Structures are given as structure tokens and as C-alpha cells.
Image (cartoon, rainbow, N blue to C red; front, side, top):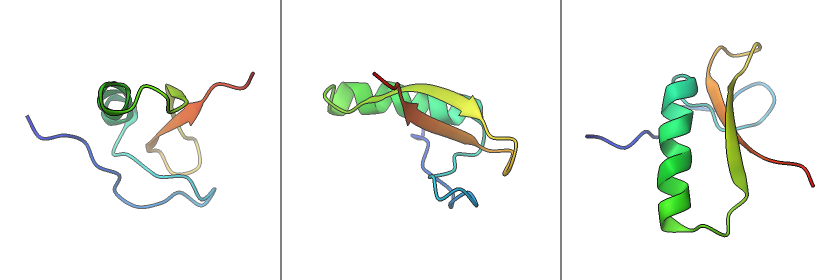
Length: 58
């Protein structure tokens, strides 16, 4: 299975994944590679209709 890669940027400046599912798959891979990174949640962006991986705020 090919790993999801960002496919551009959103007008907000965030990395854009094809959809929320691709962002979730990227989160799983990020957690395997470097668990210290903070991305823990994925969501569908209303501005670009793509998916974003974001950090949880403390």
C-alpha cells in the first residue's frame, strides 16, 4: 500500500492531504516513525475540502 503524501497546501498554509482518511493514515505513519511529534487528530477542512493532521492543544 502506498503511503499517503501531502498533495499541496491549503489557503491556511497547512499541508493538505487528499481527504480525511489519507490524513488519518499519515498520522498512523507519523506515530510509528516519530512518536514525539504532536499530530494526533485529522479533520476535513471546509476551505480546501482536503484533510489536515493537527496537534492537540494543551
